[in-house]
Length: 399
Image (cartoon, rainbow, N blue to C red; front, side, top):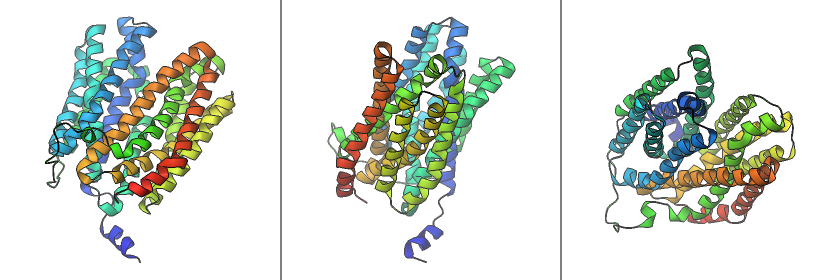
């Protein structure tokens, strides 16, 4: 038995604190995904909102989540992390209750937009605490398994929400369930036992690297490309399936297969991450994903539609934890929050651009051109990774 294997045997991956933040993260995304797929229907049936108004109301959430990300990393690095985590988690939970009080479309839009801020902040702070409570020898592996909580919640919650709505015809019950679920997550995190850590000191008052990890600029640019592709596909997959492939309700199975791919690849990839194969994992992930996007753009039939979902899931499940490890390994321990917020900012920017550009291309040239655009941008990201990013990471990483 090697020295490394002895250390891993002595230091369990699933320690008490890590298990708590894992479950709390599951609760964040479970409560979030209980509502997200059904909110357009709620706005239409309750307030009579049309498609354009629904888009405006729901877009505020994403915008505010993106704007808060850089400051989230700063807060997490500059103040006691547990206090920051509980503050944002508490606000995230309380705002579910505000949906129940929103009696008009305007007030619902205000609440939904405000909800984006604590969501953007709590996802940064919770993932940063998860990294803190992992032993260094299990950190890369733990980051991979941590993402399973998102994937499992995103696979289960929408199906459960649709079933509950069909059974009870009550949106109000879904709001209460989201409030209760997030409150349980808050209570779990309140019981965390964290060690004191060094806070940022003696830094200039205005410093860009306190809000974004400048050393990760090339990783960020390629991540924008990968998120762009996902933004196009995930946004227009349902309407494309219905209008051009005559697949009614097929998006539920599409996202289920995507989640299965994500879960399977994270289970496999976490083992290789434990061996320090971060660049290899990222290389495999982006190579698989680009094939998935090609299948979606090339095959205009159910095989391409559903098969690409599984392939994209397998690729992204390898790529995301590897990239998160890359950002973390480029940052000193006092900038873990900044590193986490940086990768999320990159993903949010790419996702938003994908939705925007994909919509414009689809409107003027059709869905097929939008999906080919997604693939081309993904190829640009893959090219950038193999030609520059992997070499610069190996040169600049701190551990």
